[in-house]
Amino acid sequence: MFSKKGFVIFIVCLVILTDLLITGCRPTTAPTTYTITATFGANGSIHPTGAVTVTEGEDQTFTITPEDDYQIADLVVDGQSVGAVAEYTFGDVTADHTISATFEAIPTPPTPPPPPKQ
Image 1 (cartoon, rainbow, N blue to C red):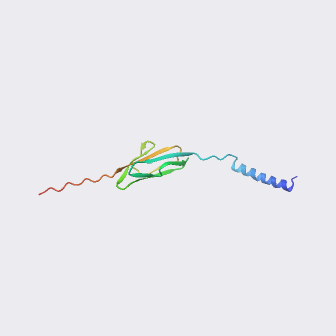
Image 2 (cartoon, one colour; image 1 turned 45 degrees about the horizontal axis):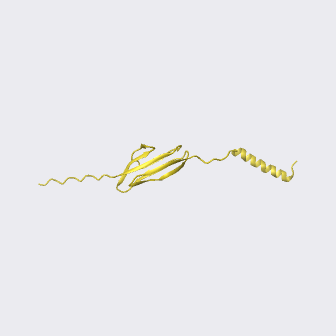
Image 3 (cartoon, rainbow, N blue to C red; image 1 turned 135 degrees about the horizontal axis):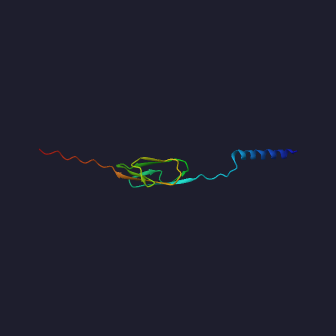
């Protein structure tokens, strides 16, 4: 029925077709990604910073660090304050987001008044 050459070609085609049936014959597409825009004010930083690309469904953590003699004043995520937190994680990302940190000087304690003279 088949020559040796024809039989080899038949087997190769059968292997290729079997692989296509097992893995599916669907085109691959690039994963969906979203952007988290991270900004910060003077006297501190946020890491990572700038436009951070995140694959759909992934988590992305940001670390907020004040400079010496400063503290975190506020962290605003998507326009809403989340308080003075040093770390924030966007879980299961399915949309673009924003995150912004502000900092303030650590208040110095008031100087106690001198003792009364006698």
